[in-house]
Length: 257
Image (cartoon, rainbow, N blue to C red; front, side, top):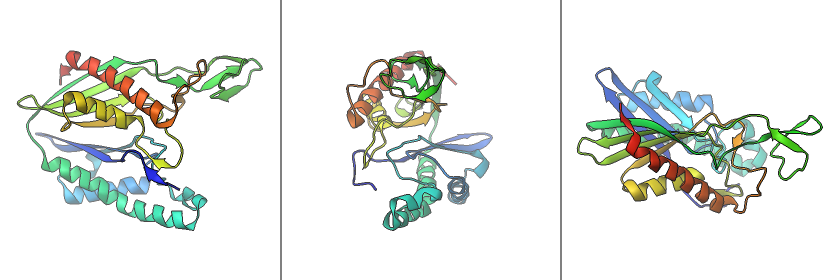
């Protein structure tokens, strides 16, 4: 059960409009989005905005330090926590829809740029082959580890949007790394929080940073060869800062869409 908050969690929405109509992307600082939540959110978005349900992409950042949203797990923390979880999930589709409504209300002429960079020092494949032929997840300093069983994805995808007069509006970042650095009982949006803060200090606090997790099934932050010297929020801040630097390097090379 959560005992406090170290960084706020958000639903961050971007709405696009062309001659073909409107579409939206929404990133939520949650571990997952249960399908009934998605269906209700899309219906409410269609009701409150001009964005049709089939043009809404809803994504969870896979944030481990946020609320649980799957009802099968609610009862594990006790009756009081279950009631809190049920009340949160009941409100959640409306909160998501409100983020899209606010984004639509701020529609303006914009220029879009896209491209990618690379960062390979903060993500690691967690499945390792051991000398006896078995496979273990996050083997730590086990001397019998042979090699990772799979790759990482170092690509840092970036979509940057600015106003017609060149003011930063949105940066969308796609990177494959579990948002599972922060543990404990404090609510936290993890390393995407530092990513957004850092880019905001450079591009301006008015710019929205939207993080979309890549294909990170077995990619996490644990280096099996060098013990992590930092933990929790400190490590999340380090990772978010390095990822932000990778994004900043891409800005000069982004191409108009």
